[in-house]
Length: 468
Image (cartoon, rainbow, N blue to C red; front, side, top):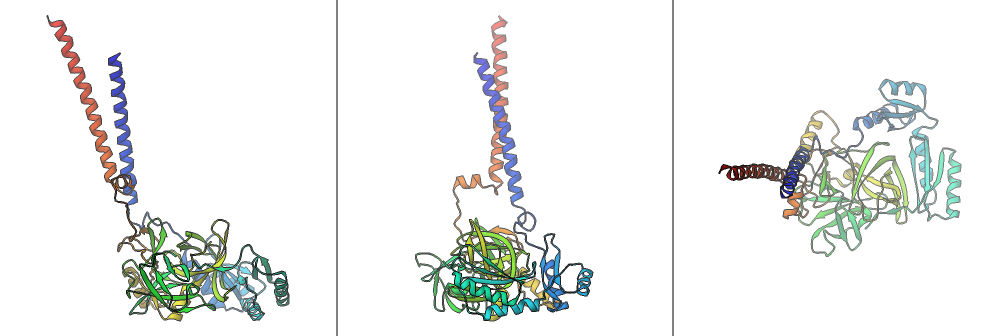
């Protein structure tokens, strides 16, 4: 009976050792995969191919606004151009894009939005041109009274049947209160992108976050002064500059924090395309994605009207104001406002980065990689309006060279757990897996040795008993 128990114990020990070898091998494999260069395996934020949008925009510019009505990226990733005549449609197809014949040109649609803008202002309303349906869509939130809705509807009816009126849930509000939080007496916002005027560095964020002179802190206790607002525009537009108290943004200025200790390196700036997949990061709700649904949108916030905005299906919540909008490593906008939340979904509007940079006479801080790309673009005669940007919220730094454009990378500036338990359970570390393998091999050898020793002892006892 005793020998049977020993055999069971030895068998269980061998099985445990073999299991340890398998577990250790899996841990080493996982760590090796996790440590591959970000440019290959760590790219997680993939948007829409930029060339598709550029093709459509180029065709619109070539054919003119009297013969086209906007362009967008179709569900299959191909550029689609709305045209008003057969000849324009043929030109679009010859260029490799899809043509959609529509009844109203961009000139007509733009004229309609001008009429809406000249009408008496109604807070809680917004409108934009919907390229895909060839209409102007007017939305009114829950704060708009029946009488105000009726007045606005009469204006829309006077324009024509291509103006569609819709009621939306919630209310259009600024998202006061990016990636990292910045706090002042006005409330909490999110840092957008780091920019420079060549001498000092600034945070580009939303204009409604605070007027000139607002002092910003990186902590709720007011111990870590971040900077001061030195330029702002709101309403009309929605952007502002916060000058760093130290004058410099510091290391990792070209990275956007996306949560979980991760960041995305930004290397360019551009205007988005309707249908493009985009990402937004904010200090309240973190990272979310969606699609661009309209450009040059107008929103009548309670505080005032803002025009020229990017309209998207990305959600946002109070505190996300000023946070960065980007896609494939390209800076697109900073969060302005919208309706809904990240539980039920909603509509969010963004201030275009290109417009803000031009108005403020600043440029995005760039990485060495971005500077090289910018230099190549200038040498090739490309537009200088797309310097590789920084992106980030304050304290959203990564080690130089740790992330490729649009890739996910660790963010330094956060407190790391350096305990033994954390190191042993870190899936990115090879050491724990090797320790498990080594321990399992020792256990396997030990059980084999114990078994051999037991057999030798049994052999001696048997012959000792039978010798004499």
